[in-house]
Image (tube, rainbow, N blue to C red; front, side, top):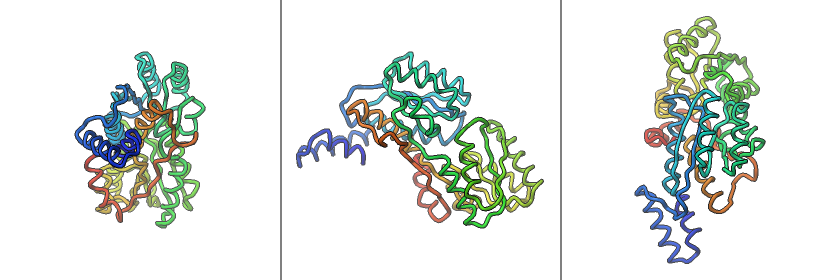
Amino acid sequence: MLAAVLGVSLAGCSSTGGKRAEEERAAQTAGGKAAVHTPRWTFAMVTHSGDGDTFWDIVQNGAQQAAVKDNINFVYAHDKEAQRQSQLVQSYIDQKVDGLIVSLAKPDAMKDVVLKAEKAGIPVITVNSGAEESKAFGALTHIGQDETVAGEAVGEELTKRGRKKALCVLHEQGNVGHEQRCDGAAKTFKGEMQKLYVDGTNMPDVQASIESKLQADPDIDAVVTLGAPFAPTAVKAKEQADSKAEIDTFDLNAQVASGLEDGSLGFAVDQQPYLQGYQAVDLLWLYKYNADMLGGGKPVLTGPQVITKQNAAALQEYTKRGTR
């Protein structure tokens, strides 16, 4: 749809020429060809993702599809260690890329290098985490959900479901967004909220930690994981602990959608990672091409959206293709 809109804006307002150009560009995009004739700029995305995180696969899918449409050479790198993430950003500054997309899960470690990009004349958009720091670091805008607001939505949903004691599982210590999610949930939840820190790089450890907590405290009636890959692990822990706790999660993927549909999961909070990748590339392109910027200096929100069994089935098509 956006390709069609851009096609009209670039071609002018002729009822015949504009429509013809729109159809031509739509066909090019569908065939994996650029829908515009702007220079072949290079945009780099550097995130705090660990290996095998399906959430960031979806972000990349969005970014790559926007890059095809916008004639962008898109490159991606990631490291869960903040210092190494910062070094990756510096490497792209040294390569003189035309735009940067960066996540700020651990903003203190990223501040200097983002400011360096700005001084080098490289526009930066932050995604997913670090909304509060984005503008101060010199980024054009931030694309993602407000993590505190998302957490508050979880607390409200838990209360609505009659839960009394919840466990919020944090799989990456030092991630400010994760703390904001749990704190936001605790703020609006009418019951008791506890935090459990686990090593997210070790799934057997995650399962054992949750299982042990559920066995030690049978009053826990809800477990909230902060990422889609951890939800099935929490389900296994619940089964091994013979607990009746409901398993809920932040983020969505195909496995979570299936879990919602079969009832092994209660609800998920989707922040639409595809949009984070797609809009980041598209907004950088719009800024380079036409000095456009959405948001008026405020973050561009992609969530939260609470997904339950009622609407999970409708999303199956999209989760299976890797866009939700």
